[in-house]
Length: 199
Image 1: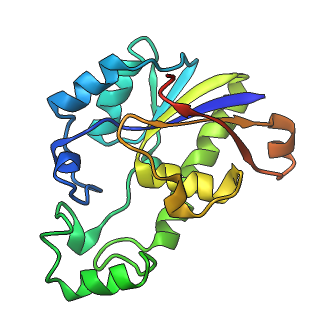
Image 2: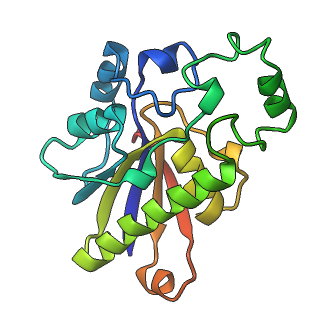
């Protein structure tokens, strides 16, 4: 059995201002750094991260003694025209209103579609699981993005929930378990056992 910790990076200035932060490569803000130091996170044998600075920095604070395995496909969505803007700044944008009216299902103008983003994220996640299996690791952390976590759990999470129901705050996430044998047989599921950080 493999236990995985799916963790969203801690807070950035863009997160504080409720901006759509995807390809914008900003670091953690001081509040984000302090947030990580106040909570208790589980130990891990391996740590997989998105290449974005906010993820690498979060992983370095939480797991300073672990080498980081960077997986490009685990980066956040490209929000295109909405990138680095808040919903208030986009309130007069017709494309944004169409996207909101679609329930977030339309592709981001000049960015990624939800389907492209999910396919990419799942490829990256499968790479991480395969690496764990190859090395016989029993506990590993993925320090990634809110959208990436939602993609993974919408596809594999038990109990089953829709994409937006898996939303988590900065520095938070889920503990999940993977049955190695069933995963290898193509029966891919993640049993959600707890929320993170540990209370």
